[in-house]
Amino acid sequence: MLGPGIIRALGAMSGTSLDGVDVAALDTDGERIAGFGPSGYQAYTEAEQAALRAALGRWPGDDLAAANEIVMRAHRTALAGIEADLVGFHGQTLAHEPQGRGTHQMGDGAALAEALGRPVVWDFRSADVRLGGEGAPLAPFYHFACAKYIGAEAPLGFLNLGGVGNLTWVDPRQPAPETEGALLAFDTGPANAPINDLMMARRNQPYDCDGALARQGTVVEGALELFLEEPFFYRMPPKSLDRDAFADMIALVSELSDADAAATLTAMAATGVLKAMEHCPSPPARMLVTGGGRQNPVMMEMLRAALDCPVEPVEAVGLDGDMLEAQAFAFLAVRVARGLPTSCPGTTGVRAAVSGGTLSRPGTDAAEEIAHAV
Image 1: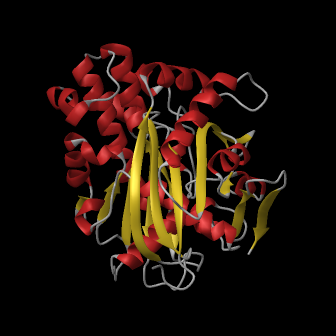
Image 2: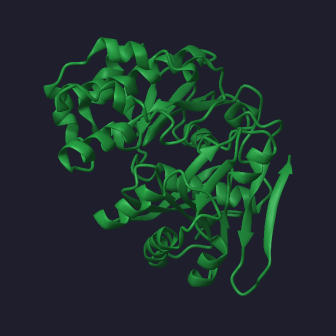
């Protein structure tokens, strides 16, 4: 029996690593975490991953029917088996230019609502971008709830190492995530995406399992120094990246051996996090790592050597690092449905706290777009 105001929401996330769809249920009122429900995963096949990779960088209006069907089919399958009152559907990010053409998350939430017979909140990022924000990262409001849930009493960091890295600095002493000084969030730089691309190009493997190849190599300092000359590292946050914004990283390691290239790309990801720490309002008491990067021992060792605080996977505090992003979109879906903000100046640079998204209900052609400053 759920408590007053608590509903079960189901979130879905297909990240820039293009490995598959994570789904996770969360019991929440959109402000606090009341409990965790079941989760699941629907992997993309190698052929599906190749088709999605070919669609990266493309925008609405391009011929994306085949890629869209892959995304929709995987989500229908992953979401169908778990009961929930509301679904948060992120879609598949293909392109992200917040100060240019906007942001593109492929997927049709209205069609998904019909297929599932449940209301679906989707298109979370567009309203934030239209109102001057970066549209990313969006998980920080959930990170704030997680900090409260684990009883944190001092500022801490949540570091998500997916295709792109992003950092949330959280002050759990503040009353709400939109309170000034409660959150600072921004992308740190590339994380797993360049390593995965290298592994696929050179070894026909999707990723560097356990950092085994990187461990055999040597970091090439010259390439690392050139990487740190990127203007992105000197921009003040909030700031965000497209998956392929650092595509020339591969060129920096193109003449290196496989092992040295993997080691250097891994060091670049860790060094991006180190640079990001310069922007934190105060040093975090600990860094909790989520996403696939936490399962790379070499990446974690580099982070522990670089940072002046304990670096631990989120499992150390009882959270699920594989499902945190999916849970975040369950949480955000409830906030959108209730008119609560999902981003604020400290997380995306938007002008004011914003609740943005589209709520589609089955059995109706109408979709309620929620895009207002709070």
